[in-house]
Image 1: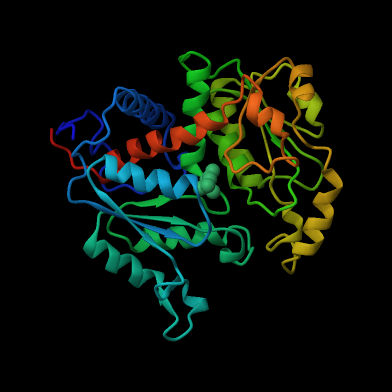
Image 2: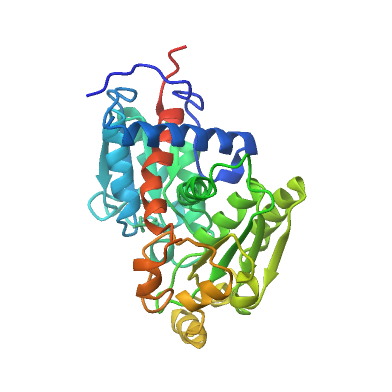
Length: 361
Ligand code: CP
């Protein structure tokens, strides 16, 4: 164990929630990336454990599946000297909003948050899709309800609006790939729809577009008609682009969007018009039939070469043969897929140390 009782960023945001990157100012996002870079360097020098979060516990409540998020949070807490406890909502009285309570099967989020606050030092939650009844925005409302009642930091592990730790990890991968420029001004980043047979949330494209705009990139969002992202999120991203004097554009053609890009980030999301509040009912069949028309939105090596060989990014898990070919994932030299996955560990350790750590200075 590597004993190191202090770090410049430990407790820097003590007690704060992290629900969205856009809740913070641009300088704070750069600070997190700086801390994450240091943590990654320590990790690669062989430092596997510090004692910064000694005696602290983070509860991980997963209403949805996960490989990367669960294991990077659990591993990260261990490496910071604390522990993480996984909670399946089926194995407790399911934490629930007031309007959906079922006697002795659910428990009010207000109570769950206050009970866990008595034991530990943080609560992290993932909720979207079926778990949020496919009412877009309900997952985020559930996480906000935890944050309202919790006395300890609440961390968003992906809801139906945001996936903040994913886009922080992606941003770190982008800075690394580009040799750590001061900011991302003049870099064209394309967040594009790519086809999947599954129904995926809007969180990643929305968060990546917003966070990369916060960092100064020229952000292009590309998708077929019907895959529009939420207006208020896109307006936020646009405002960040205006702050830097950078571009923010919506394009309806993948190849046109890719042309001359520095980074492309093609992934699936669902057509929101089939779900409340944009539709009167949840229409998964309609959404699936509609998105099946866009199977040609797949990333191939030829497409990337034609675009000028941009860096390729995807949050994972990527649907091979649908969103992207095996060839791109396994042998495209400018794929950042596994770097992004690794960086989840480092950015999350940075934010956990900042929010759950105590100032020693
Ligand atoms: N990217 C991401 O959040 O992956 P998991 O679903 O595996 O956690």
